[in-house]
Image (cartoon, rainbow, N blue to C red):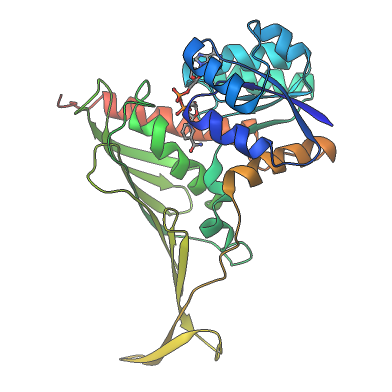
Length: 324
Ligand SMILES: NC(=O)c1ccc[n+]([C@@H]2O[C@H](COP(=O)([O-])OP(=O)(O)OC[C@H]3O[C@@H](n4cnc5c(N)ncnc54)[C@H](O)[C@@H]3O)[C@@H](O)[C@H]2O)c1
């Protein structure tokens, strides 16, 4: 049995608890959360031991799960890594670049498994494109959410856009060449809505819009690449592929278009979406990495690279005039 300690049992922490309970080979030793009201409710509802001393919980575990606010990630992860424990930490990896770098180095030195909660990597709509050649030259992303005070201790870049940054860095195997960014602080003191253009050395351009002050929710990514267009709807969990057909495909709906270069056949297909719970899958994947001694799917280095781009964006935004 892998012994897990949970740090932070607020909104997302409770989802983690529900999922941990369903993962075989795992035992939740207890939780640590300084907020008495939440701790009391969780201890009763989940029949779990509340630890009042973070060190004691770490000592009693093989691995910890950190779902505390971002500004507490570093201190909790550091304690656990120094004790040689494996760490799952929610995104973003840490609050500052310096903290992120230290965690990456400490995890390597301690030779522990570390995974960052970029859960969209396990979204069924994204999993559906596994096996399809991905080489986008233009990416358009919209991640819009209604206002919620939770998460506003960081800007919309570190709260929401970082999910898309991680996915894009995972797909575009090229270095970032240039970033153009602008953001507006409306409800909080940091950017609540932002538009960013990331140019890569291989010529790919990603245009991202993130908002936490929208009337409607949306989480869409559109990939344009030679001969095909892939639309991924992370919210509705749907994926659609439109491509130029060079040979018949009985599974796709197709139609012809006359062009000066001759008849082109366009096919539209919807890949099978796996029926999975992304949070359960990411936590199970973390457990498997420990048990089978294999790399985590979203490593601390991935978490750091996403943070690094997010902080470059923040710097660009701070150089422009934020209209409060
Ligand atoms: N992957 C995702 O899609 C996703 C979604 C939401 C939140 N998050 C991340 O999860 C984390 C928590 O977000 P949330 O929405 O659950 O916040 P929340 O405010 O609902 O819960 C945070 C909990 O952590 C507790 N806490 C505060 N300091 C602590 C400490 N030192 N040790 C242990 N617990 C502590 C608080 O009392 C609270 O109960 C954040 O890092 C956030 O970025 C990720």
